[in-house]
Image (cartoon, rainbow, N blue to C red; front, side):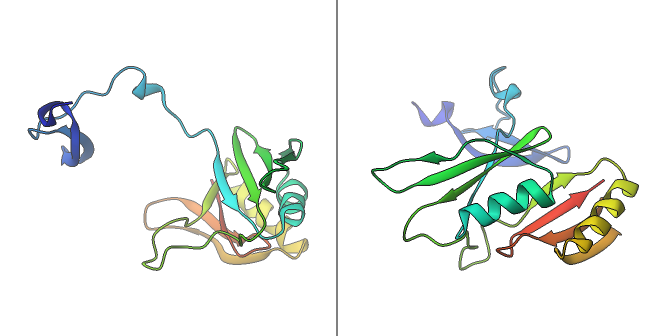
Length: 161
């Protein structure tokens, strides 16, 4: 592919991020690219069964069957939470997900409760279950109403309106 036809960088146009071609022109995404959506988020965990239990029992998820690869020892569950899925993954010799040394990488998962009242109700229920509430319900600088909890391995989970 010639450099003038490749998407080479990203830039801001009218306050929105746009893919730029090799000549600095806005690249028009194909119709196929316009339909992309996040299918699932994957998280390495140290305690596969314990994390599955938390996301099912505390957060109301629905677990699929455990997948196992006998050759590599890899195991995972997909846990459905309304219209999104979280893949919990475990493998011998791996620990839980960690941010990169420079602070980049996984930051949090955000789950929508639908309303401020629902966020408040979720946090009250989770607190009764002994879940760590790392951030009380509040309106953030970017306008979200959210609270932050920690799963059993310390991963941050936002509950948003």
